[in-house]
Image 1: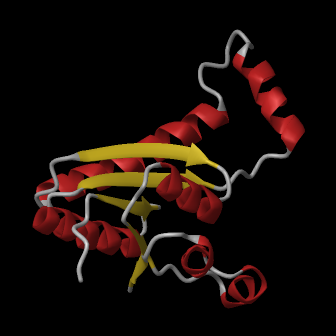
Image 2: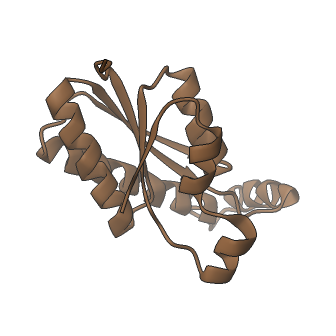
Image 3: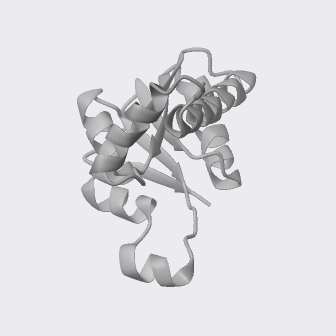
Length: 153
């Protein structure tokens, strides 16, 4: 018995692997008339005190844009580019979301909170040593996600 897909989440990062995942998800959406959520999650790289320092920088007279704002703008561009890519493939009901945190946890939590039927991610290889130590986002998702996860090569 096949359940009709109502909502699909695709996680993107701007890589060629995530482009293929976006294409795959957009094709599924077009076939099923599901809603497509495009999610970009950036792992935080700042120490907890560094965020306050950026706030101080923002208040400086000659400082127009903080590094944090520049990064957020680039993240929005990645998400919007993925949304445009999906729309060109026929996915019309889309939503692009950008978050900061642990990517696997955010993706799984968002899928659960939004009652997503399917999560689609690209297989993105880390440096071999890092992959051995930490594992990949797609591998973590396969373990913690409550809905099916498709890993697109």
